[in-house]
Image 1 (tube, rainbow, N blue to C red):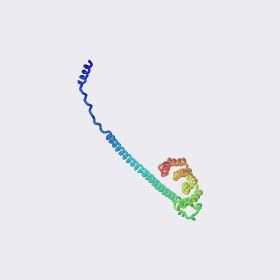
Image 2: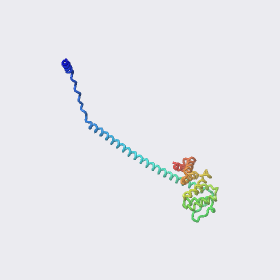
Image 3: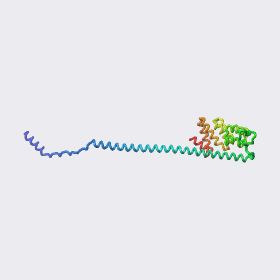
Image 4: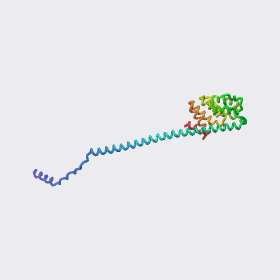
Length: 244
């Protein structure tokens, strides 16, 4: 009986079709694929590095150009302001001279400024102012011009030239570093002579003095006042420059 069962099992097993062998796929070498990937990554990194370096150089060039343009713009503005100031001073001098020539006392020749020139008390109002002005602007004898303007102010406190005399006295003191007294002179022009052509510059000089003395808040108040009251003037432009 056991023999019959064994034979039957063998026959059944032999009747089943043989399974087809699994297909063989040839795998690519893993080392080759890894090497190719690394090569591509390295190439991309080199390209990105080169691009970044190029952009950095370009940005540095642009920054340098912007700095140079800023410097040139500053020099241009400074030169333009200096030219404007020269023209303004020249115009003011012409106005002063025209005013002197139109005055009744100006009919006589103006006194010549020499080391032995007459004292202010012996001169007419117009001649006294002319003498002080010439000492300051033409002969540049500043040490003599200061007492000349002081004497003029003392002798002619109500003159039409008194405001200008205060201004020139303040300017001479400012140039000599006597900032406190110079500020007083400029303040007198700004406070007592609101119609004076020197008022805007006097306010500006008060701001510059406050700035040199370290009082930044006070300086800014003067600069803003100049800009507010004399918009568009050379003094306002200078005040704006200091504010910036």
